[in-house]
Length: 318
Image (tube, rainbow, N blue to C red; front, side, top):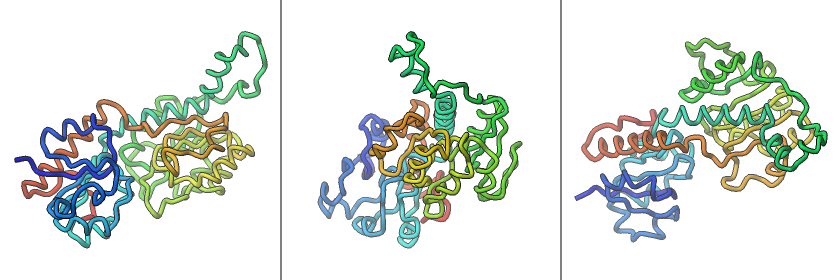
């Protein structure tokens, strides 16, 4: 008999297929579980799978009194009340580094797309303006990547891969994080100093209360009129209203975004701007990343149900 696991967030069924071969999945389809399953069934559940950004507080945990493991599909866990989980003895697991290469790839794609204005260039060709030799101020020459100063906010698994990729484009790389790391890149003691120095600010920090709106109007002003910001972390890290204003009034030159404050609904003011490259939170959406994340989910669940510690546990939770 397979162990039962609640699928708390809404996932495409294809992503759960492998996991469903090992465990009996009770899929809430993204709805509150108590609206889908009877209380007595929830009362017996011992583990769940969730997306790390989905809000999950103590009140919901209490609907599953036997819950012992919350397993995040992906690296993030910012939606989970870790304090509430710890108070209830619930272990929280995730998939550290599983999608780092894919997210780093999309970060570089967004950076190049924004700096080289690829979306504008694509439209210039498709519209016939190029063939008609119609001038476009957006097609003026821009500084390339060689010698450009690229600043990383965050130097975890994803940040390190982004730094390696940026360096391969002959850029100068600097970073700010909570602590200094043994990496061949310049360390800055504050985000403000990093923003003053760089012309591309790549946001790769883990989301949480301490990073909410930390990239604000002041940071964007420090980045400057020739600066770009790229965000592959969480939408909450950037003050979206301040970003829209900075893009509109020329405080910064452009942006590349894979994440937004309210997904899947970025503000219309943002989507209307020509100096922004937008993708629908697809940083980790590659076949190899999903394989790796599923491996971590199954390893965490298998360990829990056999009484072993989660191999990919969030430190300080449970």
